[in-house]
Length: 117
Image (cartoon, rainbow, N blue to C red; front, side, top):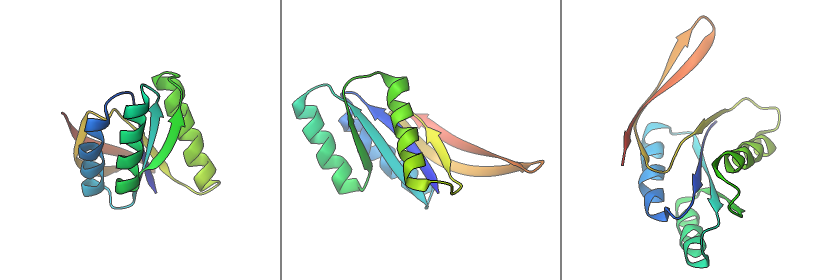
C-alpha cells in the first residue's frame, strides 16, 4: 500500500488535482489529508471534497506542517499495524506526472515526476 499524505491550510481548491494526479500514477494509493483549521467555511469545503474523493480525513487545529504530517504518519501506522507500506509526503500544490520504482542492492527508491501547480 502506498499512502500519500498532505496538509491543508486554506488550500481546498488544490485537493482535487492533487488526488487525481496520484490516482493516475499509483493504483494502490490511499490518500490522507490533515486539515489544519483556518475557518469553518474552509473546513466544510474540505470535508465535502474528501468525502467525494474517498480521502482519509484528519481534523486538526493549526498545529503546523510538521506536527500535522506526524499525525498522518501515525494514522497510517494505526491502519496498517505490522504490514509493510510506504508513505509519501508532499504539498497539495504538487501534481504527480509519473511514479516509478528503481531497485538497487535489495533496496527500493520511488521516483515521482511532479509539477508544481
